[in-house]
Length: 261
Image 1: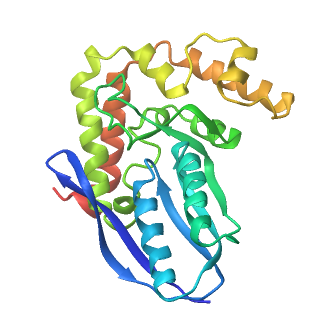
Image 2: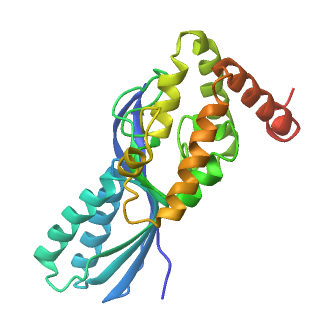
């Protein structure tokens, strides 16, 4: 047993992603072992970059991996990426058992454009549409009014964990932009986008839209009713109200710790 560290980070040219770079590497090798990884999978490019780096390292030392277990907050692209990687790895390690992947809170999707708000980052920001979201996560999110409207499910996971000041600035910048655009954004279209389906919706269509066919009908019906109640409760709410409240919440709670005067 051992622990290795490897970071693959995006390199930006102004607002565009210019490539990836290994900025830190401390690898140890345990032949014929199980590799456990924690990663956030959006496009999957950083995962590909790191895993190819690791498998090359093992091959250079005449060793192999038995299998790889991944714990992730990730998107649907991860499935395609890992299937492709399995084929690649088996070309030089035929006995490679494959990947075991644990998705926290569900399998999300990434925006393919800037979204209804015009702010989202394509291939970076996570949301629900066309994903398979854990019923518990949907229920918890919709038990409050505002979390559904955040820019991304997790934002920049590295900054959120290690550079909290940067994370807070990113969240506040998003909500300030939302406030500035609030009068121009179609709120119903934004709500539909965040929920992942057009409202109103029948129970049968809701089950199909969320890929919940194999979930207990009793669970589905309860969650469906909760969501429709949430949608109804948003009829008299404005995006401006939500944005102002989020900005107030962040600045009040964090001012004395991070933001200063």
